[in-house]
Amino acid sequence: MVNFPFPTAPEPAALIEAEKCLHALFALDSDTGMLTPTGQAMAVYPISPRHARMLLAALHAAQDMEGKGDRKGARVVAAFAVAAAAAMSLENPFLREIGIGEDALSSTLTQAGGNTTKKGSAASSKDTNAMRQITKEAELESGDGVKLSKGEDEDWTEADKVRRKQRRAAANRAHSRFRNVHSDPLSVVNALWAYEKAENRDKFSELHYLHAKTMQEMANLRQQLSKLVIQHGCDAEAQLIGKIDDQRASHLTKDFLVESAKTWQDLDNHTLSQEQETVLQQAICAGWADRVSRRLSAQERAQQADGKHRKAIRSASTNIDCLFSFFP
Figure 1 (cartoon, rainbow, N blue to C red):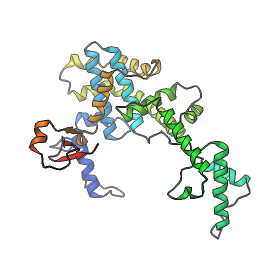
Figure 2: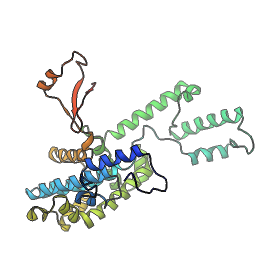
Figure 3: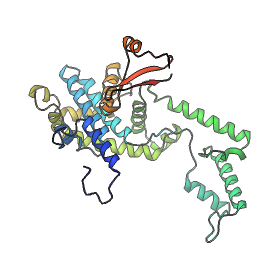
């Protein structure tokens, strides 16, 4: 990979790290450097390798659940795994407050007779102050928020700041409807499920402080991934388990995958059982196998005691030989 003739070659260190990541995900053969069956299955999906590996791991887990007779649970896991892959592939859609867009700001300035871009000369201090004042007034009239850089809110009155604080509190209340206390990705998945159920998606995004464009892209990607899973899921899963157990591989049929896609739309709520949630969390960890740590046992902590960081949670990487601390 380092010797590949890129038109604009990335930094060698970045290529080396990328190759290490693919080896950790079992996408590359450690001896030949060629794609493994798992890597070939991952390449089907137009998302990052980590997210693709997570999706395959979830399909593998759904197959196990279906083989044990939990067909409904397996369909839910498969459906939510597709949604999680889409959700994690895009920016966090949760907004602290609704921001006034550039188009809205430009329109407001035009209506007010402002001109902040003068050809051949910089905008005057008077124009800049006018723009700030118009922006603030537009915000107060619309109830929308403006993302401020450090020190930019010095001209705001206490009433302006209180209003912004209230908007952020309202955003937190709106987001609490989707919150999964154990997983941020699953919180986004909950929001995506509700978004796709909404009759007026733009209004839904506004009321729940969600970035409308990101949510729409997320919904489109989920649908695309769902079609690819149906098209390639059976082959990918057969490759993932190496076709060792034909009876086990037969559980993940096209009919099962189609039913899983329908399950996403037919669910009455987005609440997962503890088992389903655990399976999805384990699948997410599979995509970050080289970033997973484990908490040290009491015996290990005693052996490593050095009198420091007594309040810290001592952990060890599962991939490299080192210790580190998390501070609560």
